[in-house]
Image (cartoon, rainbow over all chains, first blue to last red; front, side, top):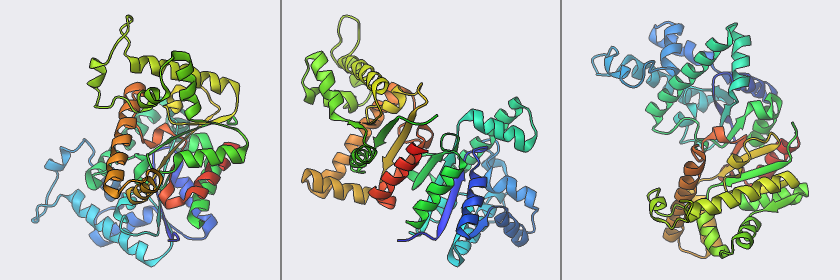
Length: 196
Length: 196
């Protein structure tokens, strides 16, 4: 089965988003990242910032926070409602067009399709820290804290909603260490595997 | 730093050994798998079959078996002695020549070198089962049992000696699902990343 969709999960600072954007550009297909959040915001009336926080990075303080968040009459937490909305949007995007999807557990949400190439990008701490310092104009110590915090929350969110383990090779067709291979080689390998 | 050595860790039935042998052939470099066992056998006076069992697949019945195996005067178990011998042989091979090394925790043993490309090959259960049926002339149920047993023992052995988790993307520069990508594409990607 030839591939139409690429999902890219990534460690914070690994350049996964940048690689995904370049891959989409080189293949001439659409790229979805913040657009998904905008779509959820439009449908739910919540702010984009609030959704960005809840949609991929929750639970902020570990799984117990789920027990204490606001719930609606159906007993669903706000996180669950946003997640369900996100799931529907990702399923509908995948139905419509060839694209690159960044993060948001898209690999798991699209697991029943056979035209999806799932990719995970990770890297060495030193290189990720350097990139975070440059991109967010922070000092090294803060960058390391940020890196650990964001990845911990992405990982908790993924493990909670998918019952898989974030970063295990078996979840993905392809995982790449961008610090060792370089961004360009990562892009080339993803494109080769997509076109196969 | 350009690469001289490729280590290939693999799930049983994923074709990792076959891919490794082809990669070595195409690159014109040496391939080490059973040769390591032969070298340990020559040095230790133990049989190759016994070492094959102990060197990568121990502990057979979980970590507790370590407590009950024979120990020499230094308090080391036979598994530890074989592992130490294997470690020395892998370090010495890496010193001498460009090569492909299959399994045996070589990724971890060579972690202090920067000329090593670490690869992990895995696959879908259906395809791995089919391959095991063909290669070992067994029925499906037996192939599935074999697959689970061998991977469980490889994983226990790796986790015990390395304090890492077998199959986590972060241990490897590159992980590939051979059922999705096909053996030829896996070989191409490994060679491209090696030559980079």
